[in-house]
Image (cartoon, rainbow, N blue to C red):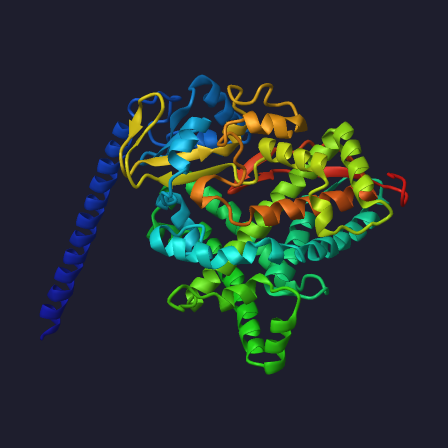
Length: 511
């Protein structure tokens, strides 16, 4: 073939490629327009706030104070309203317990438009799986959260907490407030390293700290991607600086998980290590995952194993960090409840400064305060579903199969039609009498229905241990010059940190 013919062939190929790209792009636009029309028609009977012609409600949702904006919309539009991220992604945003019951008592899959953004990070673990595979993983993982497994974790919670509180003793001597969120995050990660991986008492390594920073980066980047509609296309996203940051952070997280799993698998080849695991008083979660088999004797694959570990490393420390940090903020903000919780802890422990499993059930007022904090500051403010079959709500309005629903837990927990004086911190809302009268879907900090959080008892126990030990050693107070600014980044964080003053207490002074 001569140079001229070769040049013409290359030119024709270039034209064909350009034409194919244009056709594919055109088809993509057509699909997006058809999908938008479907979603808009599905939510036609639900009035909602005005939106930008291109960005939808995304600009308002991205702003500081957006959570309270959603609450104000919930007052204006009872039960539910449409919420659009850009031109093509629309949810029915619900914040009513009856509406929540209709959708979340079923096993519908998570919303692919947003949860798929997590796949490069946590893979197809329990959080994003659905159908038979989700059921299989849930059944295999459930033994890892049995009471007999959770009991010895109280010691791990206390060890990590006391290490953090020792550092806080030094910081408190400076007589200045400091941001507790980062320290709580490292403590929660150290706890997980012990409970999931059987890590010793040496504290976090540099690799663990790098993992913590990677997870913080990933939650921020994922939330920004959800609210930035032109980042929704995977191909475009990978070409952006934002996407490259996300992939680098994913690699750090994966390297951390892979190395720990490799080390445990290698250790299990040793006969002495096998005997240790068989004879030890309790198993860590990784032992349970490695030994889990279904009815057919099939184990989790390496990919499934990493996905579940990454899922629990994220959910087990990032959400717990948020819950504990906001709980300590509530203790500081409401000193009368802090004092009552401290008195209860001292009464339960007596002369001891250590906490045992049996003590946790006796801390009833602290438990009520934890639940009231989770009501006002739910660690996961919003969860989504895609309907696998139609639903009809109690008022007769309905949604077809394929519709997207977002349960706004933060707005539900501050819904004045459900919670009288919702901004008031009142732990007695969770007394046995009041809780028995409440709608079962009115308080759902750990989601609800068959897809509720498998680790909720783990999280509640950790929050009790951390708070009890903290109250034994410190009096907590707010920094009036640095009030926290709530922001949703997958979990509930503070844009400017959570700054508290901590005053060391004399041993036994609270008793």
